Image (cartoon, rainbow, N blue to C red; front, side, top):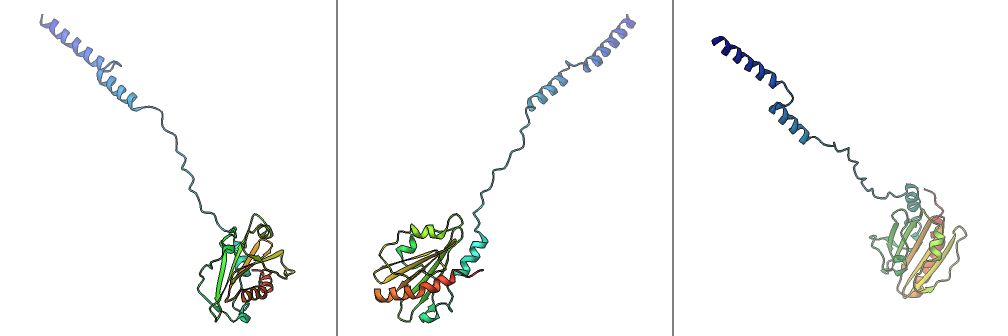
Length: 204
């Protein structure tokens, strides 16, 4: 009887040790279940959204704008002095579209308090003569001698202010004069037309 009990106990131990290595063991089952629950398709790498970049101006056009700006030496005969670059109140200048680079601007003041301003724009997608032809400036047309070195020039006068706009290649140069009388504004604008045309020929 004692020998039978020893044999039965040994058999039970063998069964328990063998069952622990079988696939249906509870510990193994729950570990596999946890691994299966945590599995699944691995998300692929995400592509970062492109960061928008600000448009950059054409360095060549920017240099040409700077070269076409009038200098103090260009307008010395007008008897003007440099002034703060405050934008002039001009409906004509306001209607000039900006180009592929920031415009260049200068301002001077006459001893009488009258003002002289210039703005130069450059266009990469069209000729400045095209912009000039469609420019809707208000006022009466000003008679001009168009400089031979330009692709065109137009002028307008309204009250005591006159604006002359010249085109050459991609450059559009506008001169705006505010004087005490319409006659003085027109005369100054006409005097400055050939000077502005010469400045348009300068190379950077």
